[in-house]
Image: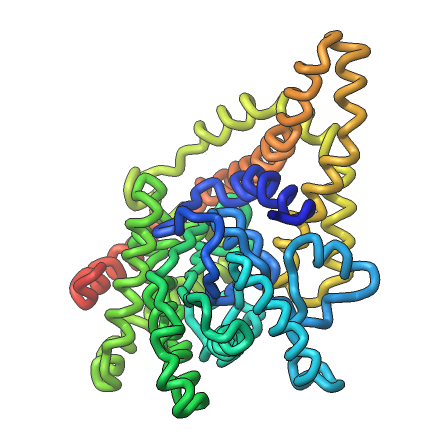
Amino acid sequence: MMRFFYLMLFFTLKYSLRIFYPRNKSINSPREWYGRTIYVSNHAASFMDPLTAASLRRPIVFFMTRSDVFTPISKPFLWAAHMLPIYRQHDGGDTKDKNVEVFDQCARILSFGRNLLIFGEGFTDDVFIRRLKPLKKGAVRIGFHVLEKINWTKKIYIAAVGINYSDPNEMRSDCLVSTSEKFCLNDYKELYLENPNKIITELTKKVEDLLKTQITHVEDIQWSTFHEQVMMLTRKGMNAVHSDHSIALETRWRYSQKLALWLNEKTHEEKVHLAPLKDKMEHYFTALKKDEIDENHVREMANHGEINRLTDIIRLIILFPFMLLGMVHCAIPYITVKRFVEKSFKRRVFWSSVKLILGMISIGLLNIPVIFLFHAFICPSYLLGILYYHLIGLFGLAAYMWFRHLKRYRESSRAKHMNLQTWVQQRSELLTEIHNQIPVA
């Protein structure tokens, strides 16, 4: 069975994540709720990762979470959300004995057919980068500990879960979760009994290789910006702002993977040959940023010969009444949560997920009286009042999108009065070089 808070989040987060990531997809997600499987995931976006991995996939999971977030206040909520503490050496204290206790809990969980979700990298980069850091051995070690605890009487599996974002911190961007085929740890019993450390190391490497096939992995971090900028110019990949959304999300994800694999296979000499193109693209985007020019405007000028503001005007008009409703219902909790989170969390990587959860809870709770006010003053129907209540999230989204379109309209107005032909020419030359030098582009 699911604990209450996990159950609540499992259903409500689907609504909130659909607002935050309107284009989301799960690939090869297991159909069963249970399964005695240890899912090992990348850790691209801190607290956002467990939200997406659990909400966009069917299996019921218990999360292994860093112990320092378990405070007297948070512990009951984290327990109710299926979270278990994992103790690291730099946390201090007798971490080994504490982890043995946690591993025993994992044994009980897995023996009853539940699943674990472990973020194998152990930490999140401050800046979002499409890569996989080396995996820790904890997942495989826990698996064998469980098998020893249950005397190898039940099968324990391991699978890789890749969480792919166009940008985890960008509202209205993309999220794709891909799950690998699982393998059975019991098949390695003899090798484990013969040499535990060796097989744990080998299987951790196997999981790492599996996980790389479920994400976009750029091996050389110095070429990650090049990879991103190629996607921005071709618009075929998973960039949050510069993508062609008429292309299916999975197709754009596959493109970003192919581009990364092509880069990873390049020799040092071949990368030296690519370096001039890399430098030109960096100069192009750096200069655009310096002059406060949006690459989308350069693309629009290149494709259509002008910058069209009519679409934004129409959207501003249509969204205006819904924006007002969104401001009434959501402005105060939105501003309060935003200020609290940005003041309390020094690392930006935590912001989007904490804002999502706190915003969902605060807006949901503060607007409960709306149901009764609707019944008393608008229409004497609780059913319609509840329906209106469930639309409040969409009104909040309308307010967000209205201000977003207003900003884009102002930027378009500024760009319309600029001479962008030099930028159009540079962009055209870059695209020609990309298509000539990069086969997958």
